[in-house]
Image (cartoon, rainbow, N blue to C red; front, top):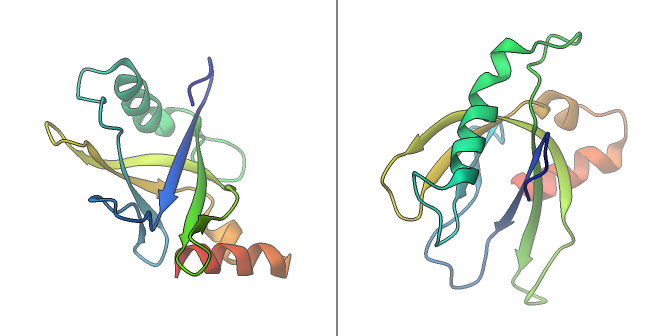
Length: 134
C-alpha cells in the first residue's frame, strides 16, 4: 500500500496453490517478494520501491541502522485451518536485489530490524518472529 512518504509491503507466506513463494532466507535476515500480476519494470509503484529501497544509505538514523520508508507486513497461510494468520509488522526493509523483466517481478529485501526482532526483550515478539520465519 502506497502512501506519500512510505510503502507498506504486504506479503503472504505459504499461500495455497500459489506458483510463487514469498519466504524468509538467510536466517530471516532477508525476505523474497513477488510483485502482483499486473506489476512490471515500468510500474510507478515499482519505481518508487526501488527508489525508496536504495536511498536508505543517504538517511542514517541515530541507532546506526539505515532509515527506510518501506515497512513489511506478513501473514502466513496455515494448512491446518486453511486460513491466513493476521498480518504482523516486521519493520523496515531495504533493497537487496531484484530480477528485472521477470514476471512476476522477484525482489529480495533486507530486514533492517532483524536484530531487534530476533533479540527483543519481549518473549512474545521473539516467538512470533520465529513462528513466521522458521
